[in-house]
Image (cartoon, rainbow, N blue to C red; front, top):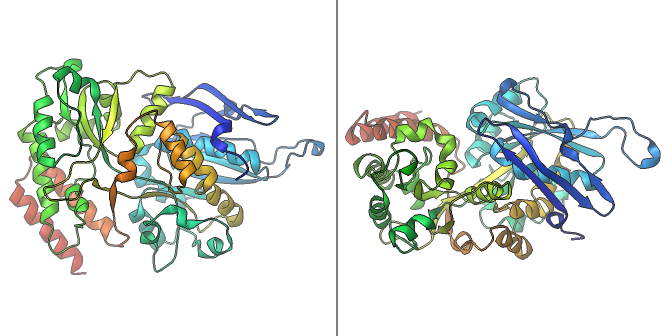
Amino acid sequence: MQFSVFAYLQYRKKTTKEGKTENIDMKKTWGQYIAAAGAGIFLAAAAGYQKLPVRAAGEETDSSTGTVQNPVVLNYWIWDDEEYYISKIVDAFEMTHPGIEIELHIMENYIYDDKIKDVVKSEEPVDLLGIRGVTKIVDYQEEGLLLELNDYLARSPLDTTAYGNMFGTYAIDDRYYGLPTRCTCWVLYYNKEIFDAEGVAYPGQMTWEEYARLAKQLTNNGTGDDKIWGGYFADWCYQFAGVQRKNYLYDDDISDTLEGLRLLNRFYNVDKSHPLLSAVMETSDEYLQFFEDGNVAMMPQGEWVAGLIMEDVRNGRKTADWDIAPMPVFEGQDPYSTWGQYQFAGITSECEHPQEAFEFLSWLCGEGGAQIIAGSGNISGYMDDEIREIYRDSLQGKNVDVFFKSQRVLESPPRPEYNEILAEFTDIAEEYLLQNITFEEARAKLEAKRQELYAR
C-alpha cells in the first residue's frame, strides 16, 4: 500500500430530516491536489432520489494539464444511509483514477429495495448498484440483472481472503455477482446516561429474559420528551430468534422463530417496555433520533448505527452518551452469538464499461475503500489489521471489541425461495404484533403459507 486514503480525506455533510443534503465543510488534500468536488451537489426530487454529479463527463480541458477530456462515466446507485461514506470513496477513487468518473444516484432508504429493480430495467443509466444482503443478490441474479464476476476476479490482484469466512456463503453455483462493501453485525446499543440516572450497572452479556426484565425496569411513565423506553426494536428482522440459533424459515422446525414472535409481543404489548409496533412503523426512519435524543435505554441494532451516530457527532449534533454490549442470547446459547451479513455492490449486466466498473468495484470493496468505510465508523467487508485499527480509532473509545468477538450467523441464506417466504412471514408477524390476530392464528397462517410455497 502506497498511502492511506483515510488519512488524506476529510468530508463533512449532514442530512436534514427532510432528506436534503447540506454541506458543512468539505476538504480534500493529497500532495498538491486541492479540490472542492461537492460544489455542484443538487437535489433531484423526481423518483425519490438525490443525484450528485461529481464532474461533467466529457468536459473539454487543456491537454497540457493532464486532465482526461473524455473519461468513462459510471452511474452508481445506492440508498441514502450509505451516502456519507460512499461519497468519500468516490472522491478518493477519482483522485487516483482520472480516466473514470462516478456519478452517484442516491435513493431514499425506505424505497430502495422496492424501486431499484425497476430503475435497472428502465432507461435510466445504471452501471453499478448497492445490494442489501445476499437474498437480494439471488433475486437480482435470477432476473439477469447482474454481471458475473468470476473472470474479473481471476484476473484481479484483489485478496478475497480478506473478506473472512462468510465470503463463500453467497456464491450462486460457485459464481459471484457482487463484492462485499461492509459487514453487518447486530449488537446492543445502550444509553449510559439512563443507566447512570437509575443506578443500574451497564449491560454485559445478557440473556433475552434478562434483557426483557431490564427493559421493563428502565421504562418510565413519562410522556412526550420525558418518556423513557427501556428498549426499541425496529420493524425489521422479526425472525431474529430463529436466525440467531441457525433456524431459518424453510426449516421443518421453526419453533425458535415462533418463540421470538412471542418475545417481541412481550416487548411491544405485554410489558410495554418498547414503543408499540404501530408507532415504530409510522416513524421507522426516526429510530436513530429517538436513541440519540435520550428516549431509549437499549436498542438492538446493526453496526451501521455506530457510524451514523459518529457522523452526526462530527456534524455537531448533540447525542446521548452511549456504548455497545453483546447482543442478548437465549438460555444455553454461546456468548456473543448474533447475526449479520454482507452488504454488497455489483455491476449490472447491461453495463457498457464492465472493465472500468470492475476497476471501481474492486477499489470500493478492497483496501482503499475499506480504509474509508472503517474510518467512517463501519465494519468493512475487506479487513486486515490496519483497517481494524482505523475502525477502532473512528469509534473513539467505544467497546468495539464486541463486534470483533461476535459470532455471526448469516442473516439470510442464498436460496431463491427465501425472499418470498420471508415476505409472507413478515406480513403475518406484523398482523400478530399489531394484535389483529392471535398467536395460534399467526402460527397456522404461517404454516399454511409454507406448505403452499414448498408444494410448488
